[in-house]
Structures are given as C-alpha cells and as structure tokens.
Length: 443
Ligand code: PA5
Image 1 (cartoon, rainbow, N blue to C red):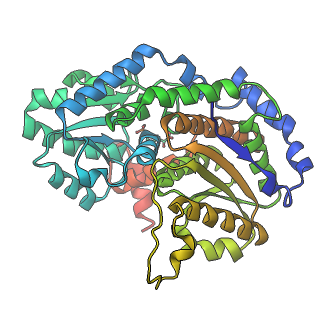
Image 2: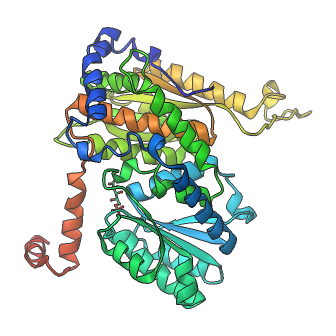
Image 3: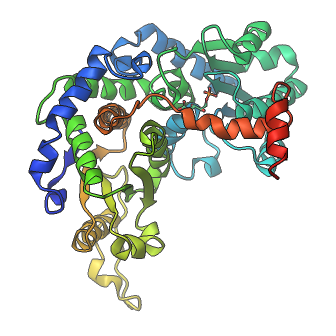
C-alpha cells in the first residue's frame, strides 16, 4: 500500500536532530494523553477513532442521501462556516476537475454561510432562481450567525420555488443530536438529519457527516476516504521514532523553540489551495492561544513565487516551510516542440508539464534552504480519496500531539467568541444591552 511520507532532512541543518529528539518524550506524552483521554480538552477526542468506529450503516446512509440529492438537484448548496465548511471544500477542490462547473456535468456543490457578503448571497440567489437545488445546512451549535442568515434566505427561496413539502425533502441538516435552533427547526420541518457527535469539534469533523455528505454529493468515494483515514489511524497508535504524526509534531515544535514562529504550508498543485485553508484553521484554532502558537500561513506555488517568493527567500528569518509534494498527476500533458522556437522552450519539448513543476519545486526548496528557510516535505502519492483520508487524519493527530507539546488545550477556541460578542452588541441583539452601551461608547 502506498502511503504519505514525512521527510525532515532539510530541517536538520537548522535545528540539530538532538533538539528534535529532546521532544520525543513530550510527543510520547501527547500521544498518550490523546489515547488515554488524560489531557486538557479530553471531552473533544471523538475524532481520534472516528475512522474505525464509524458504522458501515452510517456511510451507506450518507451515500444514499447524497445519491437522492444528486438525483433531484442540479445544484446542492452546502451551508456552514469554519469546521462546518473547510474540510468538505478542501476535499472537493482537491478531487474535482477544475472546470467541472463550466462543463455542467455533475450536480455542483456550492457553498454559502462561510461569509456575510451581501453581493455573494445576492449572486448565489440569482444563480439559483431557475435551478433545481437542494441544501445541506451544517452547524454543530445550530446558532452560528453566518450560516443561519444564508439558510434563512435559501430556505425561503427553495420553498418559494418548490413549495414547502418538496423543499423539506431537499434539505438535509447536520447538527447536534438534541441542542440548538437548527435541531429544533429540523425536527419541526421534518428534514433528514445527521448528527455531529458532542465530542467531535468543528475543525476535527471532516470525517463525520459534516464533511462526508457534501463530498459524497460531489461524487467522491467517501468509503475510500475513510479507508485512508483508518489506515493512518492504525499506523499512528503507538509511540515510535517512525510515527509520522510524532515526527511532524516534534519537528515543528523544535523549529518554534528555535525562533521559527511562522509555518508556511506550500503546495505546487492548485487543487490544494483549500486543503491549506483547512489546515490553517486546524492548526490556528488549535494552537494559537495563551499568547503562544506557530502562525499557520500558506502559499500556492508556483503562482505565489511571483508574489510571496521574494519575502520567503529574503525576508525576516522567522519562517519554516512544510511542502506538500504530490507524486503522480491524474493526467498527462506533454510540452510540444515548435519549429520556430521563438519562445526558446524547445529545450523542454517532449517533457511532461509536471516534470517542469517538480523542478520548480526542487529548485525552490533548495533556494529557500540556502536562504535560511528550514524545509519539511510531506509526500502524497496522488490526489485520490484514500491518500487525502490519510493526510487529513495525519494532520489531525499531529495537531493534537503538537498542541500538547506546546502546552495548550488543542481542542477549545475561546478566542473565537470575542468578535461575536462585539458583533451582537453592535447589532443590538436582545440580551446584549449592556455590551451594546459599552461598545457604542467606544465608537
Ligand atoms: O472549529 C470550530 O469549532 C469552528 O470553526 C466551528 O466549526 C465554526 O465556528 C462553526 O460552528 P458551528 O458548526 O457551530 O456553526
């Protein structure tokens, strides 16, 4: 079986191996805290064995529900934000034909509720007005403002276009088993529902119905995705020098301790843009607390070599890079020969485009190492469901271990509430009268 791989050799000239290995017992301790549920945030460890404990019957139900939405709808809108959005978006983008939407071949999955853009929502509603569409509304709390606004708008539109009974058949809600406004609404309206377990936090929920249903609607094999995650779950249970989740967690913490405060996740495949967005949320919300934490950033190369390349090569030396290398491409494009050769490209005629991309990757890695940027490399055999399942579980588990090495609770996100309190106060939400008075006095 092919598998993802982590290589830290291009870190060792910046941080000696001994400094990484000095964190070995902290990594072992972090792993044990996860498996014994003895660390902070231990009530949010449901993701840890989610791949192996998800019943086949649940996967079958998700696949059947996705098929019924695909049969009935030209377009399905997945409504959610943060952990209720990014995982599905990341996997769908990684697996999709970049131009599928223009070909109009499959029921497209569109997203809403991940912003409060008035023009975005206007344009979405306008696009949907002559479409047969369905909705997957995803909110663990059931009370998040962004998806609630989008759902209110699209539910009203669907009911106006289809009638209430048919609209209800085309809406699936994914939320808490009992609590929250969305659960109540789903019960009253008779929507098909899936449950987000109490002990699975948003950013760790992609391998639950939260991510799996939109991914299945987009036409991808969620059983293969889960099998990849099962393989990684089984491969990373034991403390060992070869446990790649521990290697990644130790190395990034050793770099952080050596003053490398920013980690840039680098890809050379435009399909991985949203995978980086998912990763940034996973690590940013898990580790950025108590005035600590590596700042997770990302670039899409070679595009960003023409914007951020200068900074990375030559700016403040507080960064390190983690490069995701995709070994095999799905398609083959050969650079043609040209008799006139006015562009001077005949020296690469007959070669695959990916060969050029791989040389851009290697050349950049060497230049950045020479420029003082430690480099880790994560190799993924191909952009296929099973390897993405491996990669997702790998990053989730490494995140838990890394957070414990850092000394934070990786599973809460207290800082996310602050903007909400201010927004509600400014909008004069009932119950926020005192906060409204206080914030208005400041502006
Ligand atoms: O990771 C998290 O917990 C957050 O990003 C949430 O997923 C996000 O705030 C959305 O919350 P909810 O699913 O409750 O609407």
